[in-house]
Length: 155
Length: 157
Length: 198
Image (cartoon, helix red, strand yellow):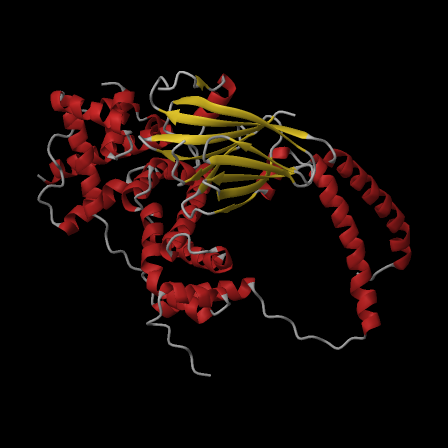
């Protein structure tokens, strides 16, 4: 197929306008703040937590955790924190003496979640997290239990 | 014996039960003949399978087996065509202008696509992870919009 | 130019060379591990032709994705995962192509096998290894692919329930039921084979 300059000159302004429109929409969305709820959860087969301050996770979270290929049946919230981030900003929450989580808004849609344990990076994950979806980071803990860090976007 | 109990016995045999439950099952097995018989049968089957692993060999010579793989690799990675001598201006006209137009459309497409693509598809396509743990794995529950990342990081919270 | 002799090189060195585009290093890896990869494909497909095709396809995929291999597991484990996934894709396609029979639906729930009496005598006791293999092969052929795969992944690949769930894209509960059903069915098939012989 031969290149047709007149067709290109007719098409170029349309392409430019569409590009500007898309960039404007994208920039407007990226400027918003985002709020996340981060929970440190203890997963166990025991029906009660030894710590009376640990309450069972809310039903919606329990339901989603039950759908995952995990062998535990009971989930207790150890700590919950909210994190609010703006574009290009990184915010952090301490979940336990040794565990911290940071959230960075990369471009208004993608977020970088970094888990830090004993001051060392454990994992860093970049993904979208729309409202209603959940990211769960987890690992085994002593006595055949597990720790989970549950992340949800609430705003 | 109900289904849950049967599956628990199996999980016990496979070492998948937490310690406290495993102790309970051991105590149960010590006094229940039916449960004991089932565990014995499951163990026998498991052992028979392990002993039956046969040394299966590729029924083709090394050269013949490799040649098919090599042909496919070559087909997927064709040798680069020889470079013809063309002037800079010709290259600009023939390649860069149409490529620029295609790139502009592609950029618009990507940006627009990101706005309107279903969130689940978009997140699956763009997630990336760096992890200081070779045993880590990721599981996606697309139906419920949940992503699980499991690491072997020890915890004592 | 004389070809390099890779016969004494370690897998890790061969992988590094192959990642740079050295096909001879990759060929040596194929030569060393082709039986294992083929065997895994055969254990899942139960068919020589499919196992050959899929094992070769796995090697081509391995070559294409080699740059992604960072040594987080052994090279053979990594290649085995590739061939397992290819076989599962193929088996799922085959299953979609044929109508599900009532028997298969029963297999999925495993209702009958849960009620089955326990096989008290070990049906494989005092069998020669060759005969044991033959009987197991025959019994494995009679299982559905889901039940065979769960056995292969658990007993041969020594995967935990959660790893199997991830590989087969199902819940841990499904893995446990399938494994239970598969083992019980296998026990009864082996017992039948023993009775036939005696």
